[in-house]
Image 1 (tube, protein in one colour):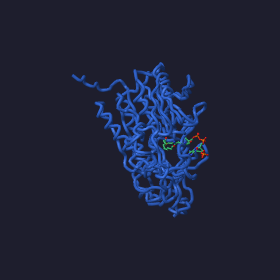
Image 2: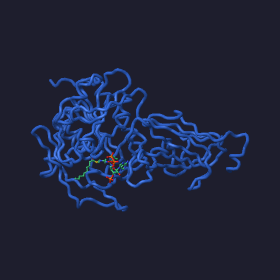
Image 3: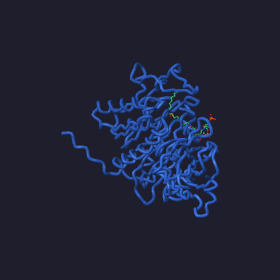
Image 4: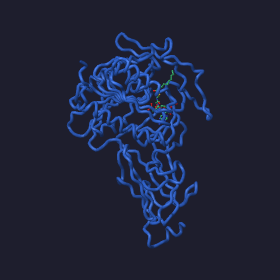
Length: 432
Ligand SMILES: CCCCCCCCCC(=O)SCCNC(=O)CCNC(=O)[C@H](O)C(C)(C)COP(=O)(O)OP(=O)(O)OC[C@H]1O[C@@H](n2cnc3c(N)ncnc32)[C@H](O)[C@@H]1OP(=O)(O)O
């Protein structure tokens, strides 16, 4: 078969066609096709990217060209490999790291991830002859997005401003404990018309390494900074938080002024880790019982039952008083979150808000979806270091369902912020 492929003088050499050619933003799909194959030729497509720490992420899938020797990943199902079926973006979302407990994160958002795509002859597991190759760049900053490091008072952050003069609605973006200053979500979101400030609160420069006390005044300072920025519009900001960052989103919306809208991705309604402090109020952390840590069949820690129920006994003191909040909420929930019980927290927050006459939050639950709901096409991280636990834990999620959830969640959170921060918010009728 491959002697025929390479020696047929009438056939052009196989070529990978990418659309957009060269590269695109990391949250956008790329259309992958191969031309110049033999009719019905079996091939294997392989993708590989190297992260900034040198870890390799790879995926592969087996395909068969059509009767014209063409292969279009938007029309042709994969016959097996890292995924199967019609999955035009499978070569990205199905990637797996060559290091255990490794998560794909982007540190320098000013450079793209570079994905190498290869077309190999045949379906052999170790790969046949390479027929074609292409390089695809996945960028984090849309043209014209500006990156502004912020060292203002205590605030350690990076502000991403959309192209143009604005002013733009402002959003504060928070990741989980131990994440330092991750910019990749803020930089992408700034390309959608928001001034997005990635805010560090721990494990970064002169910020605390531990989590003994979190002072909400720090976050208040960040809100004041963002709202006073000449390119930020409106009297309030949005908050986007995941994990501990989602919990902090709840806390900001409950204690601070001017939080207009909050998107909480797998956040908790009880305070976890250390004390949460605002002025003279302290919210203690929920209790834990390490006997409830389970082991998977691979020996990995599953901490989903580690935390006490915050609705019972003294642990009720750990509840963040979300019912005080006038913020509009969107809760994005991975129903297979193994970090903690995100669906329970979202439903409980919703009950509490409604019981206090507040606007009903929007809850979107994603089946087979784990803790780290990232921007689209980031591969699922099955297990990695949890800084609070000090060792790797499983995060939950099935790769395909998780990938689909990420695409939807990204769209939903943009729509939500546009509805609530762009000044087009529906007016709530006066209660007569
Ligand atoms: C009291 C107990 C209660 C427990 C309840 C659980 C509640 C937890 C609530 C949450 O917030 S869950 C989310 C927890 N946070 C995270 O998942 C982020 C954890 N941090 C990391 O994964 C890494 O630190 C990070 C990838 C963000 C990179 O951080 P750094 O820039 O400081 O990385 P650095 O290069 O200095 O390496 C620090 C550690 O991260 C590891 N690391 C770095 N890059 C990584 C990567 N890409 N993937 C996985 N691990 C990575 C690295 O190997 C090293 O591990 P060791 O300390 O064991 O040597």
